[in-house]
Image (cartoon, rainbow, N blue to C red):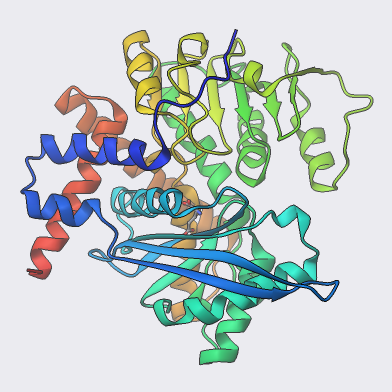
Length: 418
Ligand code: GLU
């Protein structure tokens, strides 16, 4: 039975732990190590917003730019009540390693505003979004720092950010990615992270000599990433035996009707009347009897307090930092493989890059072009990580970090920074 014990590390400690392991193995000099350990720039802004009822509320927004050694800063912008500086620092560093691992010509950044978006009307979300572009403007730019959707944000927020930037500085669709398609967004961006999770799951399943047909999958989190991952995996033949959202988990040992769950979630239907499923708790979902467990929501959900109870043989990290170092060690000891976040959820930023290319060249690609390019880039990052893991005799997380850190260090060196 799962426990709800406190995680044994914070998100920042988790990301630093992975970086430290790579830095030690690669024998980085103390100055390079310190440089990559700390973000290059951090901005904290207080954003006053006039709410629908006339009151003024002040929200705290963050943008942390971790490294631009390999190209402009790149990373999402989160709307969530748990957003804080340390969490954003962890996510910004993760973006640096993610873009390096997938060989995108970007650095890493992340931002967020401490707000519960579900408690805001559409006009209030628009006011918050426009309000934060004022203080953030000085650190952003299509060749400087490009924002994108993250938890709690999507195409509408990106449209408002792009419009506000255009008002302040002139039309430049490449200022953010993840925009609606009619405003210069790309086909396939909304689905990209979840679809990428499914593609990389299929790659490792084939690598392990398993079969996708009937593979038992549990997905924790049914937001944009989790729902698209579950849907794509069920189309690839997997049996999705459990999913969860913030309220509850829904299980069926013979497989859930994922198409119907997705349809209801997107049309805002609450409840599962008429569906063949049982309710369970979120903790039970994490320890469900399955082959593949996909955490696709917040970080730190798999920790030393529940890792012993996980029954899956493979964990695919659709969320950022869902596994603490304590859980990672337990999984390694138990022979449970982990596909790390920097690899597993890179589909989003890969397609963001494809959107940015289209914007900077003023062209529009087809969905087929986008999906083919995404598949090729995910495959090549996966193969590089597998090769390194095999060569070094290490885990996929260690291999992914070593490759990524090596590439960033090389860029820093070649640029001749002090
Ligand atoms: N927020 C996504 C991530 O964590 C996407 C970032 C982007 O597209 O720039 O990878």
